Length: 88
Image (cartoon, rainbow, N blue to C red; front, side):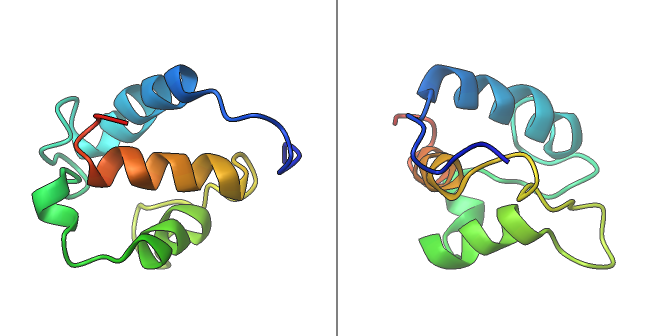
């Protein structure tokens, strides 16, 4: 895992959301194998809960844990990005 003190690369993370998350959640993030992850679909999540889902995955589903690959700071950025509709 990358050090939590490393700076967050927003453009690279936005690309990761579109490509890696989009591979399951649909290229427009409207859903596919995984559910819709646009802001209106995520409105029932508070940022801490959404971070936990991204970091630890959802057992028994196709949602993998990203903790081995992303820092908490990177996931915090991604959560803000997802909840704002990509306007971060």
